[in-house]
Image (cartoon, rainbow, N blue to C red; front, top):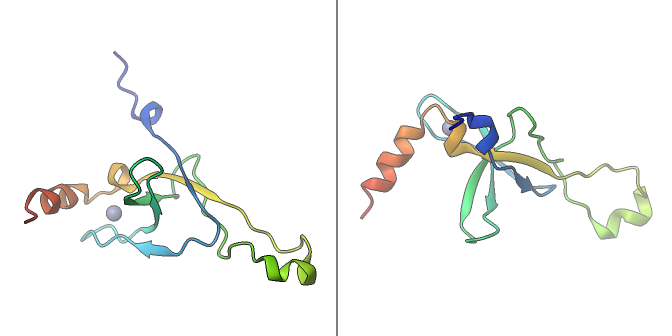
Length: 101
Ligand SMILES: [Zn+2]
């Protein structure tokens, strides 16, 4: 069986205008984006700073601005992978979730 991690990475869409956050792992501090899991609706941290990933534009398309700027303002969605997979402090996450309650 192949154990190539790259193959198993799932990319999630990060909508344009999604606010960035910082991972609060003790050594990580990476920029992440919280998006809702399309299947469960739960928020999950997405890391766009990976090979094949892309950060979303800062602002979402604003319909009221279209007549002013036309197509000049660039908006694009980003994509990334679950930060649980890329975080150097991911052990801290699993500890936290294991000790909840
Ligand atoms: Zn992290």
